[in-house]
Length: 270
Length: 234
Image (tube, rainbow over all chains, first blue to last red; front, side, top):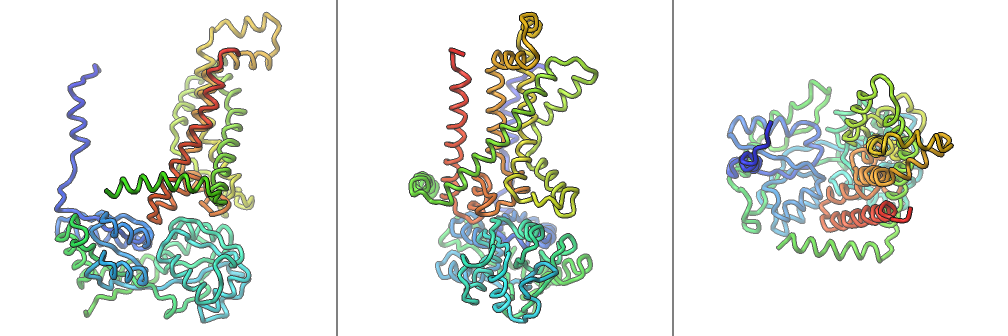
């Protein structure tokens, strides 16, 4: 075929065309909600209901909050209450709603050399892991790493002194696989654990409902500080997320397929 | 302007990271170089003779093999990484080797990425030599290894292009290094995976700083090779 230069502009225009700004929004979200598949399910239903497209950017909670601070997102879904409070206080996030929770599970090799399973207290368990290791950390500024660091702190263990602690700098699934390969301990959120537990040899060693509780919240990026925020679609999305219909989806998500509840809705009966 | 700030901060940070002698940064730089240079060297050792064989050999299915090599030149590194991961994961055929998440596994993956490039470029550059040259060398009394050496010297431009293509491909790839190396801090984190990590943490200035260091590194090595390539006396 002869090359036709006249077709080039047509091609370029086709490449540059984009969708309507008013019918989409960017959600900066924690990886755990995304990797479990829950978010895709909710986003599909929201699109069917409203025609609004949600674009999830799955990063660690720390990076999700920084996206909000830079005005690169319209809404956030994160699980790091301490950090969230900081961003709310600084005015970057508004209209926060508790969405759902689950818990973290301390998993490790079945032989459990550090004797973690005999504990019921997460802090004491972490103290034992610290003396023996190995421990695989996210090291990616995520809500999970944030909780891990808090637990070391509560256990009075300096992070550098934890025996054979390695950081993957990656998401929860990749980190769990590394822990599995090295037969190491790691802290994992319930949703990821239920999704992947059949693919690893590690076993759950400690569940501590109170201290390992993992709260997920949604926030709107403050349009007064960040005028580019697409307030209307973002607010509709947040309203949808706490609606009885979406909360029902959250409660039932993965229960049949994975044999356990991944997330417990928190906005029902508000 | 946010992005102008980011860029100037990044430039400053890149200098600062290099000059402050930050042990972790230098360890990452040296590790990146060591892994990629090893992989490229191994790819040359294996790839040049194979390229020569493909260029000069006459056997059934030669064009088919050449086509496969040319396809493999564009193989997505992340797929190579995935295959290596499958072989070395605990339940895989080499699960007991303990190689997964080590620099050695990364060298292997990068070797597999670079080798098709080296084969392809070597074959093309040797094919572009006068067809009668090998016979001429034989008639002048050169043995097979001497002949390969003399032909390689003649094909220097193309062979060094092969090294540069191989090295450029592996030092800049991230998918395979991430998958088989695991990006473990202090043992398998290289510049590209470090960039992914700090980007994921939202530390854009540091990410760009690492990117600039990576560019400088690739440029330095390639420049040295280019000087060797363009030498007039040899």
